[in-house]
Length: 220
Image (cartoon, rainbow, N blue to C red):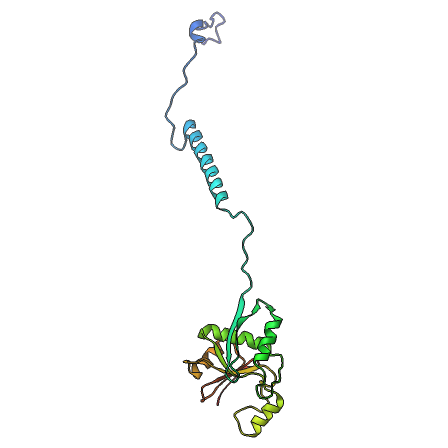
């Protein structure tokens, strides 16, 4: 017979000692299981990460520039020229970036005038840019033999059989003939082609013709 079937049976509660029940129990100190991190270790690690982040932040701030990044200025273009027939020279900056120095261009145009009759015509600024690129490769002054030629001068030279084109780019103020002491004309021609010249003529007498017209190559 079970307890439930016999009403005569009574459940007797177990004896509980009050002093034992109210006594505080110590916290169980158990080793962490696999995959868990002790709370003290976790707090210590987080504190270290925060300190490292603050240190890196300060270090990065110290390395950052205090102002806007510097922007390189426009590139200055310089020419060194000697005119063979007059002995005149030019050694100066004639442009910076896309800005040309107008008085310097006027000086250069006068320097490359028709030396036969003194006629001056504004030279194509792109020709001076080309000459500056060539000079950056040779590292010494260009010795100018002929710059601008008036139609009258060019016509006379053509009729007497001189080695000039009837419709020369010199007349358009877009061409120059020059030499560089110690550098063969063939080498100067190669440099001119690498410098994006339009027309390049290499002459047996030792000079080179360059112009800013369409791309052409010839020997004379």
